[in-house]
Image (cartoon, rainbow, N blue to C red):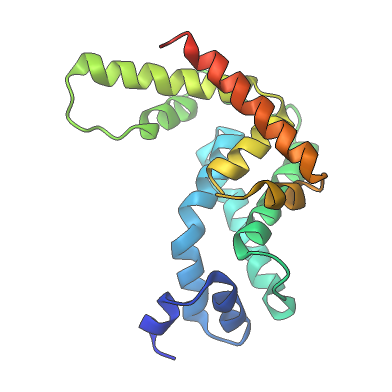
Length: 193
């Protein structure tokens, strides 16, 4: 199998190829999902170094699990479930939880990256930064379970069923958490409109 054929494979087939000894298949998976996974971890921790560390732990877990990997769900569901568990383990062992609500350089860096600099005049760019800051504040104010559900959908592109599987709750609970998260975010951002 040549490298171009690897690019056309579904994630699950790539993981099976990696389990079968094709290192390039892992690289393809990492290229496809590395940034989304990092954003999910970063937006849950507010700390880029911690997101790097947790992301590395997740990818090591993928490597460790490769020999026993079986397709039981979408690869992204499995990957973001691993990420969710790494976050939970981290929060349990490192209290108090880091907050996106801090006025730290890391939190401001995220606010600046939410909207790319597209060359608009300074007032409009500042308005976008204010909106990004408000979104980060609103995310930080969400209860942890609602924020997790929202970020799994927004960053992980997971369905309600996949979010339920990743967090170990019934599907209706996941749906309710998403609904409440969206309503709270909408309400928090309406004041800027």
